[in-house]
Image (cartoon, rainbow, N blue to C red; front, top):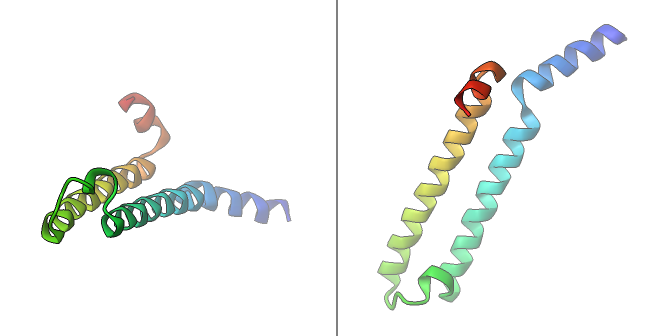
Length: 87
């Protein structure tokens, strides 16, 4: 039983499912929040009069959010020794 718990703990620690899930959900929530802001015209979108301009701004923001997500995921894939030396 101890062996099984040790193996499963190592597997979960190595693949970091919890962190990946958290960061993916955080990015999805941010994109959803941006879309709501586009729909009602608040925040960065309140000064843009046409829908095309708001959508262009939205696409840029989603691209930025996805890039940040990829960087966080790459950071999770690095061994702990590399992450500590990079900071």
